[in-house]
Image 1: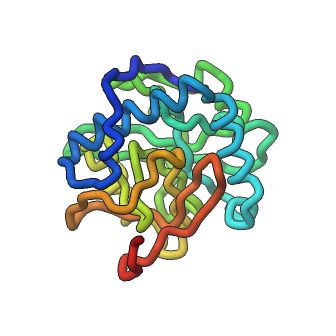
Image 2 (image 1 turned 120 degrees about the vertical axis):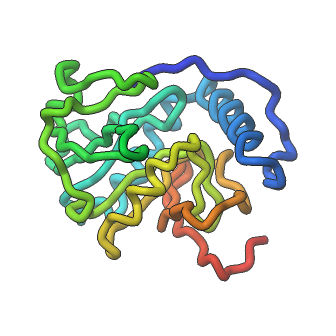
Length: 218
């Protein structure tokens, strides 16, 4: 399942991977790069990401998995729900008192049912408010979308801070995975003190551990 949004167009800055631009400039680059890759092979890319995740022991061991509904050109994880008996938690966005996410239980059969969803004012599909709440501490593995990630696991999101507020509420042993495309994994991103990191990166070429913050990035 995917909720489409018209991608913003514009030339891809091939030098953007040097990461000296502002966050907004990097978002423009990431949106254009992602749209270009998805236009030419979304089905193949999505299937490769889902298959790479299914092979991981971390995913096999997880009982409760926090996922997301793809919006626009995000990597679509819908294939993950097919025939799965895992407990899935999907995010719902709230604007007050500050932007934050709540997680709601959605079973594999419910994922394909249009009655499960409502449309947020920004356009993305979300579970209905009546769906059971899943507390962050119950999550074993979280799949985090993003416009771009760096090799240390820092994330470039859409600027609202939803996941920056949610990730610190997970258990210390929870597995946190950034989901993106190879073309959007860069050496370094600008970051601030409140920006949350992921433990692992998942792309069409597979799963990798995020480098230690103290590691040299070459």
